Length: 525
Ligand SMILES: *Cc1c(COP(=O)(O)O)cnc(C)c1O
Image (cartoon, rainbow, N blue to C red; front, side, top):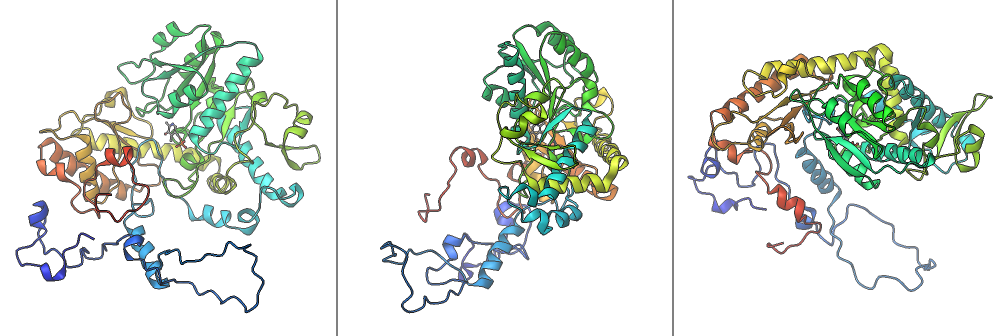
């Protein structure tokens, strides 16, 4: 612990002498009011302490360890039960969470996770089933998967859906593998996938991982795909385009149908990154826009927890042309009304003979299916439409409340969709987007998405979601305006922010490049 020893305290030691901002005594404990310093388990644990009482082995009980009994204690560190509870509770308080406040991360759709979803997902009939149970004992679970699949197909106007991918990026891979299987089936070895410059990094990564060469599609000055440039590049070597709609500049690709028609005319397929489906759910059906494959992040649009709160789930909806190539297993209802989980041996009966393979050992993320279906049923079709409308309204409220102060590169392109995009143009001194983000932490907010999309200098992408009230949006806007004003005025103190977080500014590059994955008591690490 870096906290000063109580006996070393001198009256002139104030926090002001450390950071030049706030004044108050440096505390003897290192604690700051109710924000408690917490050392690591390795620093406070004792090898002779445990919070668990185990019974002594019965005298004369048979030893089944085959001579592998431990000869020496292994020195595992322990705490008492109350110390353990406090240790983890204190650590958890150093986290920011959607249950604590607004989480404006653009592209991530950090919306409230309704407690009703959690209640249903914890029902033993859903929570305690095992993927290897005999099918007739888990009919209800298959009904849930199948009903969710039907909702996703209806909401997107598509033909089929692969439920097993376990995240958005996994869904992208599934969709691109379907496209590859469809091209191979017609003996058409195309090599290139076109991706806009503003795309999420997972798009080019997916295309490259699936064995394709990636080429950029340029954008117009309004932040949308350049249709003429795209048309000029299409040809017999282009397998697919991957387009995010609404795109990562927060804009709807209004020429999506023309894009799809041009790609299809050239013999290619259209992959849509559906991570931003929250902005159009209930309003637009991607199937009507000519999309062949699109992943849906259940953990974004359909409110299942993410960001450290739970596993993702990325079902992929498929067009009629791609559906025959979707992966195994899948759910299907037979004439007697019963839903089955179909594997290799049953697939032929359902006419599904060209599956490219599988994405996961079993059927996908059951807990997330349960939550997402609960969310969909509790909103209904009209409620889902309102989700999109309110998400877009909230983002436009933020865009228009800040654009007098911050540069909004596409503010003149009309209303945004569900996220508002700003740049660092006009910041004073050598202040950057990073300094503004760190200052937002001092104001009690998780920062927005920074430096993405790459096409905007010092990008700040703010996505409030529909679950924020006007009162909480106003509070956020007030905080954002205050740090934006300081950034424009060139307030150099922002370079040291955050001042009030449990940890100050960290070397994030070093942490990412050279992570320390094991604890060491050597001060040099
Ligand atoms: C979140 C996101 C992805 C990836 O989804 P994961 O579930 O994180 O794998 C892809 N594209 C966009 C635009 C996203 O926002």
